[in-house]
Length: 47
Figure 1 (cartoon, rainbow, N blue to C red):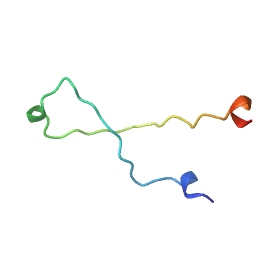
Figure 2 (cartoon, rainbow, N blue to C red; figure 1 turned 120 degrees about the horizontal axis):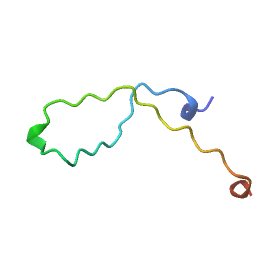
Figure 3 (cartoon, one colour; figure 1 turned 90 degrees about the vertical axis):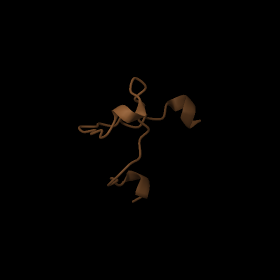
Figure 4 (cartoon, rainbow, N blue to C red; figure 1 turned 180 degrees about the horizontal axis):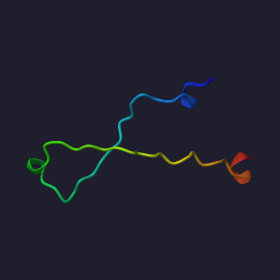
């Protein structure tokens, strides 16, 4: 099975918090993250 199909234990995701100054953030917790399903190839893309 290709490694790309196996679940990952960790992933780096860019996170923008543009309304906060760096000194306002001491800890950020992100939970219940759900990824989008990969797009199915269309018939025109497969040709």
